[in-house]
Length: 380
Length: 229
Image (tube, rainbow over all chains, first blue to last red; front, side, top):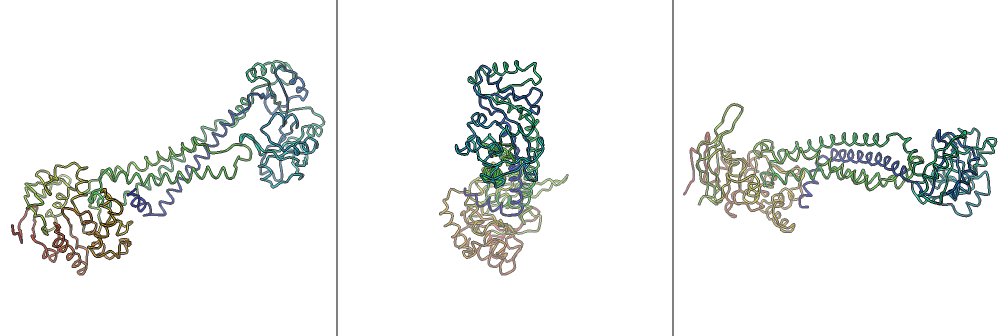
């Protein structure tokens, strides 16, 4: 502690340089935290899922529908307690710049299927009663400044035309990994307007025994194997995991970019610390003459490097944590539950420590090993 | 009684292929409580002498003893601790850390001790009082005149109450008035506080106040003035 004024005074020697060095470390670690959180959020989503829910989709691909007639046959399968279904709608609102997910759902069965979706009873009743109504996530309501009872019109992209819905419910979620940035409306309405096509994008099933999930899934797929629309059934977690793989090897990409940024900043920081140390050779000589040991001088330079990198780390990592939490960021619904994890913060701090060592070690060793008589030539 | 003893000291430097012999068997005693001036032309070995006494450099052969400690045999770690306790050093250039106030500059040697903040504060105030700069303690070096800067450097040199104070051309960059003030101060430190002072100088006014005055030339002691013992 007694050396703190000396360390702080040295950091204040070139305030602008110190500021920009700290800022560059902060920015690098902010980017690291952001990119890493994309990876952890996708990872968390890929492992999320209720063990009592299965998802049945077209075996050819999720974009191909299944007949709505499968609902009754699925409901009749041994071990299946409940069935619901949904369809990706793909509507745009306004200029379409702000994307959000919107689905046609079978309202009652879908809300029963997802107790994680919280809707006040009177709003639920109103939604179930009115076929042209919709429910929206609390975040989506805030984004657009909508109000309960307001009509909103989406432009269909998959199902052309203007689709106007009355907002009758605003849902919240109990789990941050569930998207609260969506609009959901009656599947009946979709079915009616596309001339009773009788299609469902996918089915969600609740089973009575999680241990029997594999057997039930196989039985379902076997039943539809030779039909015109064969199915692929898996647990909700498997379904989410396969969805997550559609991002590609995003982990490698994000980690590579993150580390490249950190490495670039390492060079900037190391250069700044080295410049600062080089300018003070004469002062190092004076301190050695006074009696400062090589070890103390080594520690002082490392403390300076540490003060820069750790201050940058606190600003960058803390800033990322606070910013994403305060703004409830979820990448327009693509990354629900986007939150900088403790693991990411610790990883960022570890990087800051590496930055401190890598940037401070060379100048600290130089200061410690500098022969005092040689250094005295720089005095004055 | 000799406080500083050099015995048969050889000191050589290698400059490219050439070997430069600074001292070739120098033997010299400096008495405790003396105000010794070391004079001589450039390259005569004056600064090397100070570096050897301060333990900043080592003799090629021979021994250097200060207050019964064999400086030439100490490890670098021992030397740093020893210097902090026994040596006060003042340079020709004022050598204050520009980012620290006068107070903080003077406090530097005390950071290496176990003294509490309060004790350090007392000592710094005393040292700045001795050099007459109590009212400048919050000033940075750039806010001080050359003479004031050198007086702060002297305060820094005496604050830890060292055994010996070494000064390398302390008036070399000062005007006549400031030079006079600094020399008055050194004389007072010697007379009132019984500090042993060794000053390397070209300044005849500085030499006038010192006893003894040693003349070095090509690494050899060629003349001693004012030696009473």
